[in-house]
Image (cartoon, rainbow, N blue to C red):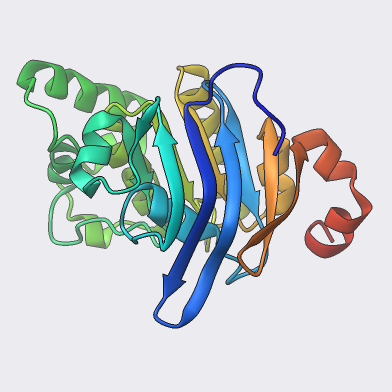
Length: 241
C-alpha cells in the first residue's frame, strides 16, 4: 500500500473478517485521505460491503486495525463511530419504512443534541433533495427505489459526517436516477465530505473517484489512481466490459 501524502482520515491495516467459518476479508490494507473519493470495486461476494460494515463496526474483525482521524476504532461501538464522524448508507437503503421521510431524517441525527442546527440541516436536505421535500410526510416505505436511496443518503448526512460510507447507491435504479444520485454524491464531496464508495458499476465509480481498490475473494488485488484503473487491461476485462 502506497503511503498517503498527508495523514489519512481512515486507515485499515491487515484487516481480517470471518462470517462463521468463512473468511470474508483476508488481511486487507487501504487508506482514505481527507477530501478524497475512494471506491472499492469487485464481483459480488468479494468483500466490499463487509469492508464498510467493519469500518462502521457492524461486524467484528478477527484481526487487524481500523484507525479513523488518528483514533483506533477497531473495538468501538457503532454509535461511537457515528458520533466521531463516520456515517454509513447501507446496501438496500434500509430506510425506516413505517416512519415518515421527515422522521427518518430526524433519526439520522440521533447522536446530536443541537435541535436548532438539526432543523436547519433537515431544511438543507430538503433543498438538496427536492423530491424528499415534496414527500416529507409520506411513509418511507411507500417511496420509489430512487427516492429511498436519496433518503438513505440524506439520513446518513444528518449526523454531519467527515467520512461517508456509500454501499451500492445505484443498485436497482434506472439510469436517469443513477445520474441524479451521482450528481448528489459529487455535490456532497464538493461540500467537504470524504467518501468511501462501494459500487457495482465500476466504470461509473472510477469516473467519480480519486483512487480505487479492486477486491477479489476478500483480498485487495489491484489499487491505484482511478484513471490508471480505468486504463488497466485486467480491470477493463473483468469489470468494465
